[in-house]
Image (cartoon, rainbow, N blue to C red; front, side, top):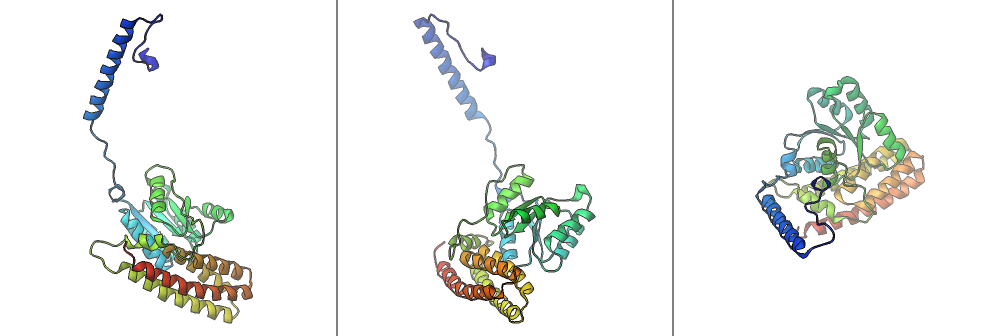
Amino acid sequence: MSQSGFDAAIAIPLKQSQLRETIERAAALAQRRAESAASAPAVAVEPPQRLWSRCHVLLAEDNPINLEVSARMLRKLGCQVDVASDGEEAVQAAMRRRYDIIFMDCQMPGMDGFAATRAIRERLPGDRSAPIVALTASALASDREECLEAGMDDFLGKPVRLEAFEAMLLKWLGGQEMVADSKPDSPLLFDPRAIREISQLGRDGEENLLDRFIELFDVETQKRIAALREALDSGRAEAVWPIAHSMKGACRNIGAMAMGEECETLESSAMHGDLAGARESIERIEELFERSLEAMKRERGADF
């Protein structure tokens, strides 16, 4: 009986004395099990900061806002992070030291993430080749297939949230499956969760972190809008879509969701040579930029 998982048995026909004796034995057995469980040593669950305290991460991203936000998220999880602003820097970093995992933006100036991944795979032996996770704002199946064909192992959709980084680290370094989806559900004007999350990335004693990010978003966006207008005025649609692509990820990382959606529309228009549609998108982007900036500043005054 014990091999079948039963602790006791009563023969039929049932006798009252047998029933009472069996109940008493079962109660005693339950008590012993409870005492044994209470005396067993507790299993310690490592917090993320300790779990990945020895994890060396390479983060390749050309957009300064995305780079700063993502690096802080990974450091908050306990990782040791090196950064690269383009594909060539990423390849050089991967040659210099061994990383546990690499997060690679797909669209970067010069050598993009695909070319950088191919170079790393070609130059490094298998035992030194870390998992490479693509960071992409595209949800197209063809783009994801391109990531895998280039030698990448997985991909994360932008904007990447803290829990998505944590899930990917668990998947590749902790042997657990992906538990989070980083793709936003809808293009709201502004998602306050983004800057609330950013506000928690500061180190002890670090002040005005959120102010720095908002100022960086303001300055960088104005520069990129000016570059977009210059490219359109000269009829260079091919120069528009890379800027729009970079802006798309930065907007979503800081919570400007509707603006990020319009940047995606601009990117598509430019890639198809639709200059008239691109001009309309830039007008909407400028309007959404002002509204998003105001929303950020209002949220900045909230009590986190």
